[in-house]
Length: 111
Image (cartoon, rainbow, N blue to C red; front, side, top):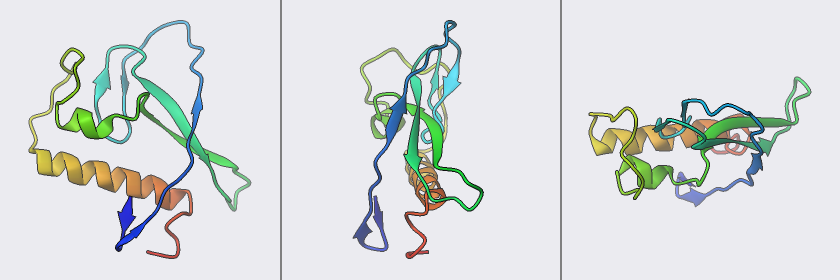
């Protein structure tokens, strides 16, 4: 993700979901709602003052948020379609990713 003209990235680790029951989940980044098992917990290492070692979010399991906000996915339509403009969806996705990166202390020197 470009921040102030500089590229930043992070390594994510996907956690396996061993839940027996499929449930409705929403992606924390793009807000796409899945009827069942469309999201997965992705985490990254952090250096936390409170002893935490990892933080995570439920994100589209195929990391296809950018495709989903543009309605370009080939699967059935979303469970709860949004009526906001694409530019607002893009801004929200960038803000949510940037916020997660800031929590992971990857942007401390840029903010």
